[in-house]
Amino acid sequence: MPNAIIIGAGITGLSAAQVLKDAGWQVEIIDKGQKPGGRFASRWFGERTRRIDVGAQFLSARDPDFTAAVTAWQARGWVRRWCTGIPLLTADSLMSGEDGFPRWLGVGGMQGLGRTLASSFILRQPATVTWLRPNAGRWTVEAVPGDAVRGTATGPAVMVEADAVILTQPVPQVIHLLGSCGLPLPEGLAQVRYDPCVAVVIDVPNVSAPLLGHPGAVRIEDPASPLSWIASANGRGEILHGDLLLLHASGGWSAAHQDHTTAQLAEELLADATPTLKRLGIIRDLSRCHAEARLWRYSRCVTPHAAPHLPVAGGPPLLIAGDGFGNCPRVEGAWLSGRSAGIAIRDAG
Image 1: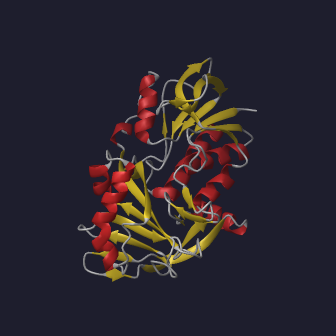
Image 2: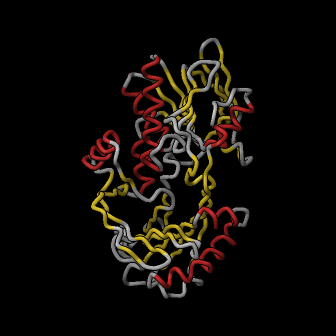
Image 3: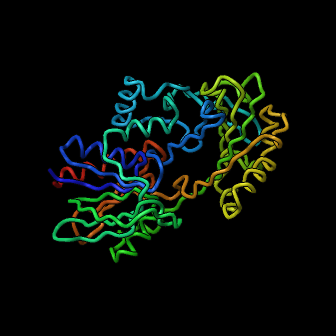
C-alpha cells in the first residue's frame, strides 16, 4: 500500500487525503494546530454553551464536484442550509444581496465540520514539519511535536517516510520550508499574495434579540469602514440566548494593525467600527463587553496562482495546493485544489 503525508489539516489537506484514501493509499496528516480544520475555527463562550465561527463563515458551491460533496455532507447531517443571499452594505445603502444561491453552515460550527471530515484519517498534531528530503525514491519528513515556529515544541523530532507529500500551508510558509530544505521553488509561487484579517468576537450576553436579523450577517464594501464582514451568532441560528458578534476587518485595516497586541486589536477595531455598527442599527454600547481578537495572517488570497496545484521538481512526488491556487477562491477553491493534487498523485502512481 503506498503512503502519503499531507502537511496541513485544513479543507485542502482533507480533500486531498480523501482522494488518496479512496484510491487505497495510506494517508497521514501533520498539522501544527491543536485541532483539524485550519480556518474552520469556532470560539466557545459561557463554559462551551455559546459558539461562533471566527474563520471561514460558510460554504458555497458552484463546481459540480464540490456541489456533490456538499450535498453528501448535508445528507449525512454535517452541514445545514443557511441562506440564499447575504446583505451588502456599501457607502450609499444596505442591499438585500438575495441571489437565490444557497450557502451552508457546519452543524456544530465550521470547526465541527472540519473535525468530522478529519475523523477517518491518521492525524499527527500539534506537530510542525521542519525538514524534508528525498531518499531512495521516497520522502523523509521530520516533524517536531508542538509548534516549532513559535518555540513551543514539546518533544524530540520524529522521522516519517512517504511515497508522496502534499504541502497545503499558506504559500509563504511553503516557500520558507522549501528554502530551508534546499528544494526548488516552482515558477510563479513567490507571486502568490494574501491579505491578513483581524477577527474580533464581542460577547453580548444580555440581549433578548439578535443584533443582526436573518440571515445574521452582512458583507461590507464601504471604503470608510474598517470592516469587510459582520455576523451575529444568534441571527445565524447558532445560539438562542444573548449574542456573539463577529467583526472581520478589511485587508487594508488588518495589514496596518497586524503588529498590535490582541487586546489593542479588539479595542481599536471596535472603536473604528462604531459608525458602521450604528448604520446597521447596532447602537448598544459594546465597549464594556468582553471582546477577543485573533489575527489570520493569511486570510484571503488576493493574487492566486492560475494552476490548481504545483509540483516541485527534482524528486519523488511533492505537490503544493491550497486556496492560493486556481481561479475559485475561499473554501470551494481550497477543496478543489486539494482534490486536484490528490488526483495527480493517484494517477501518477
